[in-house]
Length: 468
Image 1 (cartoon, rainbow, N blue to C red):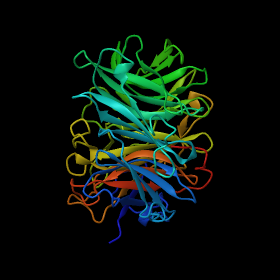
Image 2: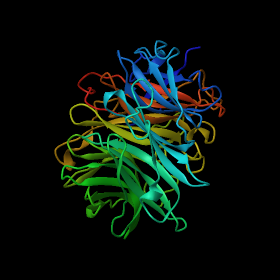
Image 3: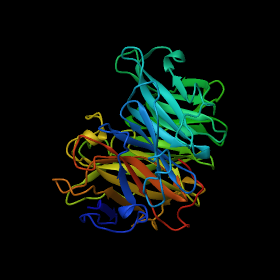
């Protein structure tokens, strides 16, 4: 039986049931979305982390298999595995460190992929390992120590606790690497954001804790050099007066790390996910919003745009009501990300889950929450203007600016919804966005597979001027 595609365009009255429509590239597998379980995986979990263009119009998909293996799966334009590659379509490497659940990846120049993994150190301590894979799926031995760089933040920052968690990877104009995330401090219950900067060959340049006045910073999820030459770092924390969970932007001296300027949001509750500095020097971040003192309300999609002078928080179309069930943007840090596309536009992609089901904070894995709580992918397109007031949803995309799609698996689950699925990252392939993530294709919690989808649109919407 062919896998089913569920796709719903979102309008003013997004209360209809599942429908079949256009939005993904049907030339890429049934309906434009496919699940893969590499032969090397066996009974191990498979988590899609990043995609990058391969040779001869192929697509490389990098995934974590189990706790030690990083696999590169090569796909043909029709979504089939390219068995010319490494004999069976998969090339695997085995970093020496054992990973935990925190994993992020991104495509960089030349078809290479960077992966940042939280790994086990001494006793209960955790560190970060950065791995660079070449287009052929093997370690890039010019990077770090044979393709790997162990980043122990304790060697750079005093007073840290046990956890060092990577949330995002950004690559700058000179191929410098920025790792952002969160650390625990020795002081019980205290969390702080960090930014680590590395050269293109994996040499650690500096590591900074990030703080701003009168604001309790929690984590960082984007970093890069702004148009003013300062290092911009953005994330989420708590404004102390008034008491509000919202975003912050810290502007640091790239050489000394000194705080040169900052800005914080005034509206709560706002949580920002992955973001980046765009080629024009603007920083854009995926975000979600829920009114304060409204714990039963859904998280609504937003995009935060930060400029040297002036910012905007763009309201996106709401997530759908599916078969009478309300939905919400996923409430974990890996839930949402953005990529720039053609003509000053940005694509926002996020995981969607059913409202009222356990979140990532209550379950160690989004695919392991109650039933199939994570049920698909929400996508919207935003057009950026020359000033904050000109930023707006690009309503010609989808229906009123957004669409929702889901991999249907081999059959609906017992509750009538698709199997659990979670998008991880968007990138570009032959001028169209591709999404990589994970799914439980048979509505069970026993196995997760790699999930890949390719979007479709004319060249006025998508172009080949953006990366992973």
